[in-house]
Amino acid sequence: MNLCTTDNNCGISFNKLETDGKESTKSDYDNLSKIANTPLSELVKNNPSLLIFPKVLGVYDDGIEDEEIFNLHGNPEKLEDVNLKTGNLMGFVGIGDTQLKISSRFAKDDEHDFFLHYMLEKVFSINLFDFENQISKDGALDLLMFSFPPLLKKALSKGIFRQYQTFARNDANVKGVLDVSRHIKQNIPFCGKISYNSRERTFDNAVTELIRHTIEAIKTKSFGNAVLNCDSETKKCVQEILESTPNYDIHNREKVIAQNLKPITHPYFIAYKPLQKLCLAILRHKKIGFGNEKNKAYGILFDGAWLWEEYLATILVSNGFKHPRNKESRGGIRMFSNESDENNFDRNYRRIYPDFYKSDECIFDAKYKRLQNGVSREDLYQIVTYMHTMRINKGGFLYPKEVYPMLESAQVFKNKYSLAGYGGAVAIYGVPISVKRTYREFVEFMKEIEDVIRKYDW
Image (cartoon, rainbow, N blue to C red; front, side, top):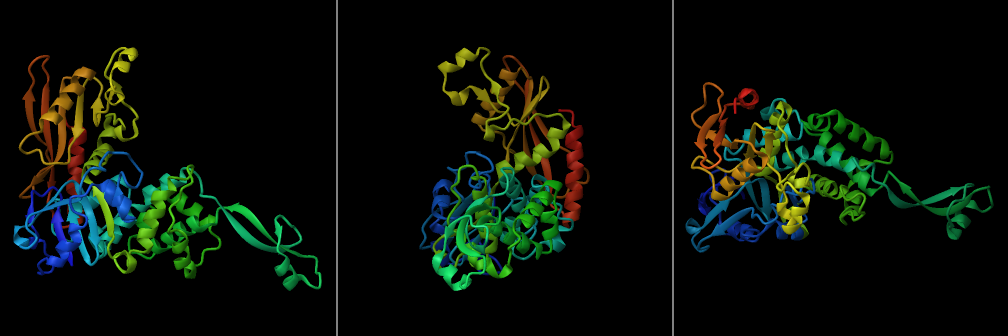
């Protein structure tokens, strides 16, 4: 059964999770209850076919490991009394024959999640052209393939993966261990050749072959070229894999998959581990959830908070804003004027990492959650701390705001509040996300909004 809901819902009756007019069943509840109310760190450890952006895939360290995909509570004997509550995660997750699609709360309908795909397009630099005509009916596989370029580039930044392999040679250039039995069979009477086995490090190995098979699989999709040619770096990485795998044979796909079931452990090539996991998910997608893995969770999920922040970075950084990398511990700002004073405090509090700021002008935090009714005390205290430490008198929060009906003109919604004490002001900025009839219309609207943000007088 394919069930549907949205991110950040406040709790929806389980029997209202329906697709194609069919209500969810007790079997669906039994399946999903196996992964409900469980931290991501535990789920990923026990379910190798479950991929989470960004933490689990190793791209960033954003601390979402304690979050839950969804929460189930209520009496399972009466599904109408059971509520399912979601957080910031979007995508697909399934177990057995039950799959739950978590769309963004801005989705037009179950089939057209324009906002999620637009953020992925911007963050991952993928040009989907006409999204509606290219997207397939299998949204989970689409999301897996959209995630391929960033992980490919991350892995190949360490160079092409090399691995020792044993080759059975039969020539006059002996560089290994003599294979007596094979030599007798092939070279008696003696013909000037020696049979031997050599162990060599090579680029054409099980891991690079897995990546090659994944590239070839993506090529067969309607938007495959858009994914593999999304930017010059991706094109270069794809070409390097093609040149490094001269022994590629489509008929060896199952063998290559079997050779990669054991995760990469080499410390230098650790960036290949998430790519290996993603490639397996793409190539085995049709088989996931069946056979020996019927009791394992599978799917791909994106943390909305991370995706929203990275999307805003594509707009603000080019307009002069700095974007410290809290998730990578880069670009932090000292809280203490004297370095020696930091030793008296826990290291986690020695530096601050605002999401975006312009020196002496303004400072912002990106928030994916709803802020129509204001911000939490912790968020308010955090932004005021940032403002005080950096001597900036304008701070605020940027969040995506549902707008119904459709806006006639692009605008940013602003609520401003003056601070006591040293003064200054905190504002809540709502970036409108409007429902549109087609993906092209949605893209045009978002580009108008982005132009407004670039020119906005904060």
